Image (cartoon, rainbow, N blue to C red; front, side, top):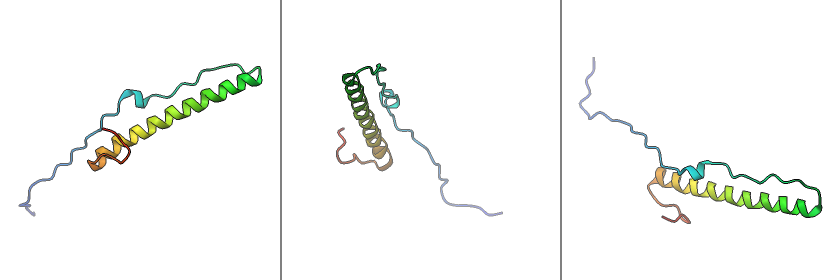
Length: 78
């Protein structure tokens, strides 16, 4: 038998708070493409959705980086 005289170490995992809005998909309207103008509108819908989705990824990264390092990542607002 061996005895340990040092303090016992406990590991506590803390889950960072990620808002529900950042955990949801970005919807893209369903449209019929009957004309070239329709295709342009569909493309615009997809570009806007991609921008929103990338914004969510950046915001989530800011939250996780702060949780992991304890520091606010450059470019992230508090």
